Length: 294
Image: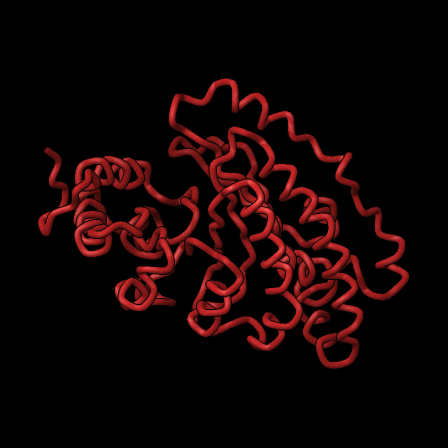
C-alpha cells in the first residue's frame, strides 16, 4: 500500500562521489507530500485506482517457505492505515480535515483498512509465517502526531481486527511505531499487541517500559541508531548491546535490535559488531554479566 502514489510526491536526488572522484550511481529518496496529496476531495477518493486483493503477488512467500531452515519462520509486515491516509492526503490537509471534514478522513481510512486487512490475512495464512508485524507511525520523538482520542476512536478499532486475524492463525502481533507513544501503550495492549518496536532512546526509556509492561509486552530494539550505531565504534556498539541484554533480557521479553531500521549511513563494521555482540551475550539463561551459556 502506498507505492502507487510515489510519483506524485516530491523527491530529492542525491549524488554520492567515490574517493577517486568518479560519480557513483544516483540514489533517489522519495517521501510523501506535506501540504497536499493525491486525495484532495470526494472525487479523488471515488476515482482513485484502488488495487484489489487479486492484484497483489504473494508468490515470494511460497518461495521463501521452501528454502527456510528448520525452525525458522517469516515475519510478515503490513497493515498501515493512519500513515497511508495522511500520506495520500498530505499531512497539512489531513490535519485541516480533522477539523473541517472528519467524515472524509473516516471514509478514506476505511477504504484503506478494508484492503489492508485482506492483505494482512492473506499473508498470515501462509504456513511459513510465524508472526505478523503491524507498522503505523503514530508519533514524533516528543509526542503523538495527533490526539490520542483520534487514534482510540478511528484507528485502534482496526488494530483489533488485525489481532483477530492473528488469533485465527495463532500468530503473535508485533507493533512498530517511531517516537514517543507512552500515552497509548495501554490502548495498544488492549488491542492485542504482543510486542513493541523500536523504542527510540530519545523518545522512551526502555528500562522504564520494561518495569511497567515487561510482563505484558515483548520489547524490541533500542540500540541507539542516532548515536551508537552511526557515530560509535565496534567497541561502543558491543558495550551497548551487552548493557541492553544484561538489563532487559533476564526473564525473557526482550528482542535485541536497533532503534529503527538500519540505514545506509550506518558503518558496516558497527552493524556487524551489533550482530556479533547479540550472539556473544544473548545466550540463555542470561546472567548479570551478559551471556551465561552452559
